[in-house]
Length: 449
Image 1 (cartoon, one colour):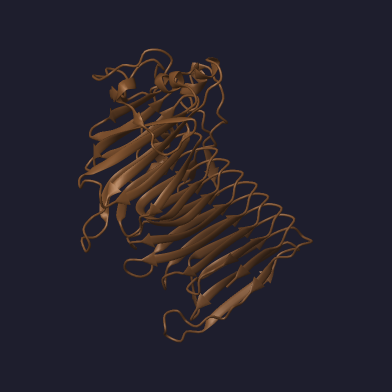
Image 2: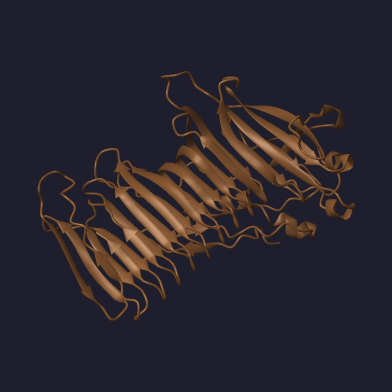
């Protein structure tokens, strides 16, 4: 049996770095055999990609990479067991599932019917997580803060909309645990749900974090994870309010929108849905989708200890637009950035970067223009490639010395064939260690230096 249906592929490698491994897209939701459904665990995938986790410390996975019977609650589970055809991933122990009489009225005009429930989980958890499995288990996830949320706890409020009560009652919304100190909520629907006549289910989960008193700094959260196919994600303005050691939001066939957030490591993954918003990370960040646009602002920080901070932004068949601000805690710094799409315009800019920093950039698309603007502090080589009849172009912007020392800037370049342009940039004659590659086909490639 395959441990996962995800395709492991290497994103364009950064020079002198480990390969970046990323999951492939979720399949469209449809009736599947139990064996096929068990193969669709994206957070199983996280534990399987150990090389990638080597440069994303603190970001683990929801599940160990072992198959699990769909009718159980995890091996040796001390809690409640689910009978019938429910996919409960290996390692998940069910503590309690909401009974029919425990549902409250939805109260927010969900048509034709809605019910709601709420779980309060300890903020001190090693991981807070939400999972969904089964037909019609998708919907929406909102992540926000509230001054009314009790300190030391995080609430998971679940509103289920349904057309038939027997459909609602066949679903299981449960308090679940995993590993040592990991607490979460699971949404499970039976594998034969779509065989039981016409009916609809939709789950809207709101994760509410407490707000810390003014002047006390952002709220520390060890880890927040979601694995919810066919579900959208909306994250509030959290940058100044919450600091995540690690965050992993996995959906599919819906978008991910983030007003703002800050994390040490993060991965945001969907398919057939856009990724938009403002992201700050200080170790590694991946923004991954397919067949939909990406438009993001990213702040990537490095502590200049010799370890490279990494960013991967990837989509396909859609435009990609990213503004990336690089910073360092002590000057200099090392950064690795990969931005990739296909059949869509690529626009990548670096408004700021530290003096004496090292940037390794791979930016690529196909059949569409590629335009990259480098920061004034960049020093190193560059390579532009496109088709022979669409020659690359270089724009020299002549910025002032970002160090304030009045150094002279030197830009050298030379043509290699009709579709290739190479060169280098330096301040004061010192050859930098940065590398930049901008690639496309059948369209122009442009670099601003």
